[in-house]
Amino acid sequence: MLRHALLGILNYHPMNGYEIKQFMDQSTSHFWYAKLSQIYTTLKALEQDGLLVSEVQPQEDRPDRRVYTITAAGQTALRAWLAEPLTQIDQTKEPLLLKLFFSAQLDKEAILAQLHIQRALYQRLLETHRSQTAALIKEAVEHQPHLKRDALLWESTRRLGELSTELYVRWLDETIAQIQEHF
Amino acid sequence: MLRHALLGILNYHPMNGYEIKQFMDQSTSHFWYAKLSQIYTTLKALEQDGLLVSEVQPQEDRPDRRVYTITAAGQTALRAWLAEPLTQIDQTKEPLLLKLFFSAQLDKEAILAQLHIQRALYQRLLETHRSQTAALIKEAVEHQPHLKRDALLWESTRRLGELSTELYVRWLDETIAQIQEHF
DNA sequence: ATTATCATGTAAAAGGTTACATGATTTG
DNA sequence: CAAATCATGTAACCTTTTACATGATAAT
Image (tube, rainbow over all chains, first blue to last red; front, side, top):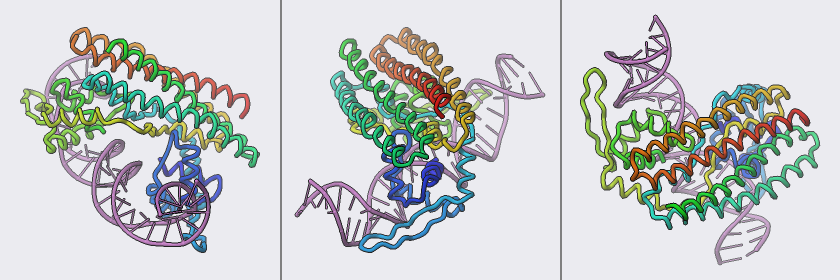
């Protein structure tokens, strides 16, 4: 699936691997992230399949940049993937829930400690969604008004991130209270 | 991570691969699922590592069952994993959000069709969480009262499943309305 | 008659992570 | 002076999925 993410990103404009990583960290990371090493190898594979072409831009005093551009075949592949209906629910994997499910083995204090750590992390993430991510979308559309339709969809993904992080914090509070009382 | 899930499950009582699959489908599938083929290969690997032992139970007219039992080393490994603090947020991957993010390429009707399919799927899942999953937990604790502490944690994972599925449906409605008006 | 259930496995491929390797420039 | 940023890549490994292989019994 990273293949499709890369095609989608490069369909905005040509970029190098490092820039793609930054773009993803700032925009898609709460529903799709990737390591640099995977980005580089996947870009290479997409070029071999003819969905991208690359060009090396020499630089002085730093490594040359390899800039990738989407091809016509790449755009066709992107549109085909977008049009494909999703007839199943995403089967997500959540390590915290898996651990909690089996945690009757642990004592009360150990479980509560785990949950408090998570609460702090999610609280911080919530603030990122509300300020940083929201600001980035606003900024993008101000500089590039033709991205208005895109921005509407970006905002809806950001909104789900905010709402579900908020829910997570509430659920953690509820769960902490439950365990404190009844465990 | 499936390794830990298998240790956690077999810590309740010995089972064969097929039963483990059924157990997971009914309980952990909304935060951790696995295919049978992966379950079989992972069980084998855990046995080679000395965390499980297996015994073949011959059956007439159907394939013999290979029943796995957790070892002392397996229980130690399970507890070590449970005690390990989770200092990071789960980086989940959600294909629907990835697709939606890049969907400005599609026309309005195509996007709305995608979202309506998802709404139907999540609505059905919501009912499963509320009736089936809730009933299974109640039943388990009625038959085995010593699982009361476990059941409290199982219920909290079920509850997050219910709450977040509910939220997803609300968000889909909100997003459908937004796109209908402004796209 | 066909589909679902019970039951176990292997092999190949795809997807993703971790570790290694290099090195200049800028910021704190 | 240390850490972050810019910049690209390879190799080994681990995890997961898909496809193949088999076959009886029970339910619709």
